[in-house]
Amino acid sequence: MKKLLLLLALMVIAFSGCVEEKPSPEELKVMMIESVEEVETAAFAVDTDQTIKVVNQSETNRTLRTMSFETRSVGDGELNVTARAMKMTMTTTSSEDMGEVVSKMEMYMQGDTMYTNVDGNWTRMPGMPEDMWDQQNQVKTQAELLNASEIKLVGSEKVNGEDAYKVKVVPDTETFTMILNQQMGSMPLYTMNMTEIFEESKMEWTTWISKESHLPLKNQVALELTLTADMMGLPVGETGEIEMEIKSDSTVVYSSYNEPVIIVVPEEAVNAPSWLDMLMAMMAQPSDVTVVE
Picture 1 (cartoon, one colour):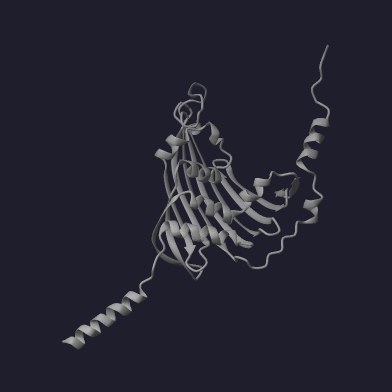
Picture 2 (picture 1 turned 30 degrees about the vertical axis):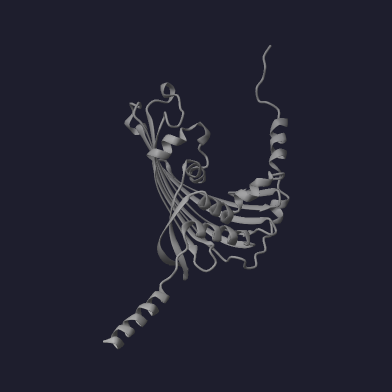
């Protein structure tokens, strides 16, 4: 009997030694931030689906009462933090009632200059503010958003063969606004009632953090919300009873941390006119308006 009890005790001790010790959410945040600070290079891939349905209850024409837009954006990029350089390409397919439109974008950032190619046309934007580079650093931005949010460890999964903690993220209003700005960058959020939008929206935010390196490996945000004219700060008397239903599902996968990355800006981009040159040229053009005395 004593031998049996001893054997059971040894089995319990052996089993307890195999149980994985998980860090607390706050400990994981600290380890992640420390690891991100050491990142010199990284690659990322983006896949976003977005559906927007605009309903105008005041419109008497049934054809115009509801308009729908669907957008699929797929892209990838590389970062060289040490050289303050980035490259990103993106293909966006937009579908609406009038048909389908495909747009291709290529962007580089080196130092304080951003180079953008939209459908074959290069423009150059020198003198970008210092914080613009940090905004383009996908890994650092993601880590800061996670650090500002409540996180819960909900399990373990593999991402591209690497063991990772699966984490559910619960943002506050400010972080939610930053995420919404990433998803809906063209919308003037400063006019909107973000507190009400935050309370009425549904967001499922999941991220995967490497168990070994403590770096983000994958981030997924599913968002659903309905915006009224009042929420958007629009004058109801002028716009009518408008509702905008938005569904967005975005996934970013991070890889190739600290592997060699050389980013070279194309010659045609370096020689492209700056946005200021283009603006001055437009202002210098004679007006087509003829004044009759």
